[in-house]
Image (cartoon, rainbow, N blue to C red; front, top):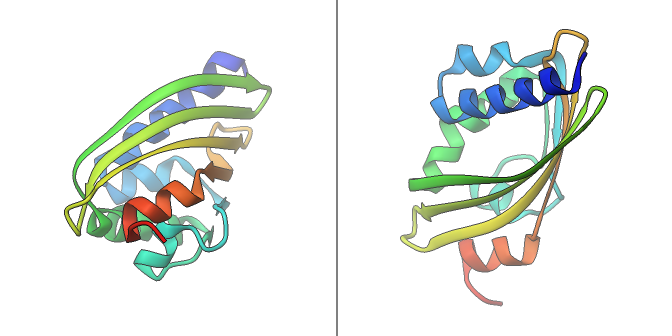
Length: 141
């Protein structure tokens, strides 16, 4: 897979995620896909959901049913660098939104995607500022 194809696959997946169209999202995911975020991250805690999603059903459920319950309005994603090495794509982003509790949310993320030979996502490793996420969602400690 060419680097530009790999980058395009990831950017197309982000568009699918934002569409909240379950079948469109599912088409971007390999059958054995896994999504790993930091344990105890504020989003997982607030939604009472796992930080380690396994399989397309779990990821689709999170993106279509759960994510919009917490991030209720004004969701904006600003992409930073997109780097690629073979089937590995690293994506920096900043997300802003209005939370269900009315608070503003803003946090920086770094995602490492591994794609299968068909360009579908087989693994996502998500990094974020967990303390900032905690403060945005639950308030300062």
